[in-house]
Amino acid sequence: MPSWWVKISITIDRRNGRRVVTVSADVKPRSQTDQVLQSLKAETLPVLQQKFPGLSYGFEGRQADRRESMRGLLLGLLMALVVIYAMLAVPFNSFIQPMIIMMSIPFGIVGAVIGHLIMGYSLSVMSTFGVVALSGVVINGALVLIDFANRKRQAGMNDHDAIHGAGIHRFRPILLTTLTTFGGLTPMIFETSRQARFLIPMAISLGFGILFTAFITLLLVPALYLIVEDLRQLLRPGAAAPIRQDVKLEQ
Image (cartoon, rainbow, N blue to C red; front, side, top):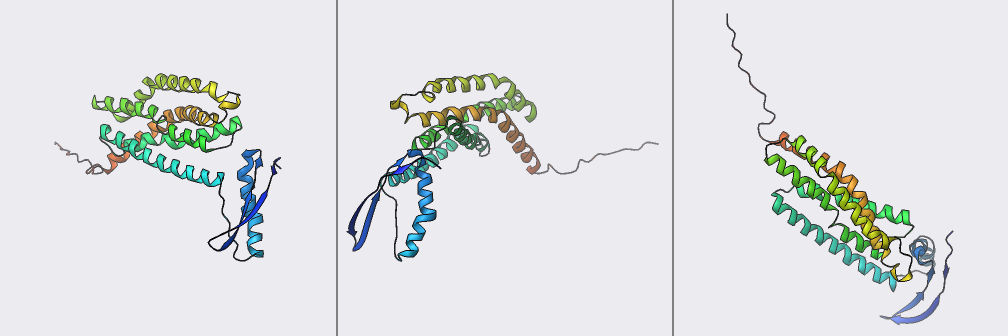
């Protein structure tokens, strides 16, 4: 069981003709706040609603501010994804390749969550800030791979050789960029001062998200690139038509 204590102060007021009871509480450690809220919603509050018909409840204060911040961040993330897609679709002249590049973003979020588990931090609003920033950074490796493969295909190389060459020639730049970015964030991640602790979750999201995505990109993006090209060949008109061969028999 988590070691937390709750300090409660109660005031009674009326709002819109209904009696309002305001309960304020402090949870220590603060990281256990979500568990306490889940326990209240699952166990305590349903019992009170059954005992007192007409009773309703809502979470305000820091929780309301947190919900508002999360809604704003999710809306900002959605808008950022739309802008990134549009910016990629124009130079690539394709609707599919930007989606291949942006497949790195969900894996970056997975890396951010794994980083929080490794470092022992709970997900917070600052972690979400890091995830939003991460969505524009993790696509760099996939962008480099796809661009190199497209240029090789324009030079006459087939799909497989083009993406294979991209993985070989761009492995070192992707790896070095990832390691240097993670290394630059390392001092902030391992900072122990009290003033920097609220920034550490954002640095963890960025650092571990980039580190995890780099290795996934080198495996996932080439596979998706070849799958898309194979499907394009199959769906091309006349691709499945049988090959006719004229055979002449001479006596």
